[in-house]
Image 1 (cartoon, helix red, strand yellow):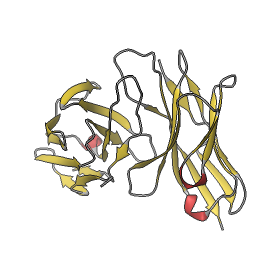
Image 2 (cartoon, chains in turn orange, green):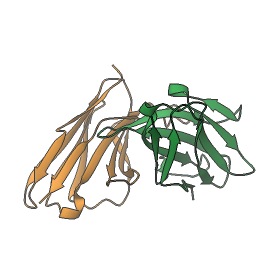
Image 3 (cartoon, chains in turn blue, brown):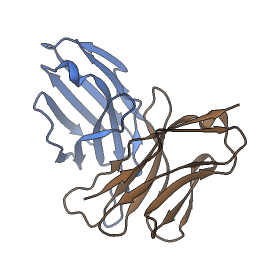
Length: 116
Length: 116
């Protein structure tokens, strides 16, 4: 299984809603990532988890809250979002290898989020 | 600091003709370089990477890329384009000497359009 599965594929939410994005992989990867991608733009890194610990937070607003319950799952909790947060949210995973870079990321298909 | 530039927003090529998608990079030391492809409504897919060794790197779907240190470039090439190659292509770089960060910086993307 070389897939990263993201749910839901599409999400519409109001600015007062609370919702969660989910990501799952069963490749045994111990690094997992959240990226945000606006239309026709490159992905922007939000968070990185390494061995279930948050290792990078790219100064993301607190209305985005990541969670890594175990080595296979990654969640992104959303609360009080703004319309400008509408974007494609991509999850990715990779297997870190000591001393050897491994940015061969496996991406999910993303969740297309619209905030009204 | 690490950065990558893709000077062309779009590249048009006829099916069967060779294609080149350009990428230049900026890092303080020797770079780790990557190409990813994104098809509509999908996440990014890894194509190839350069870490060290032979300057010509072969990847998935018949693509290859040439690392040129003097020109700080890592252009993506394919000898004969297919209509199915039409997609958005991202170059990415990581500076192995950068402390703390272990994530990729993506270029702005180049849309490849292959005409039948």
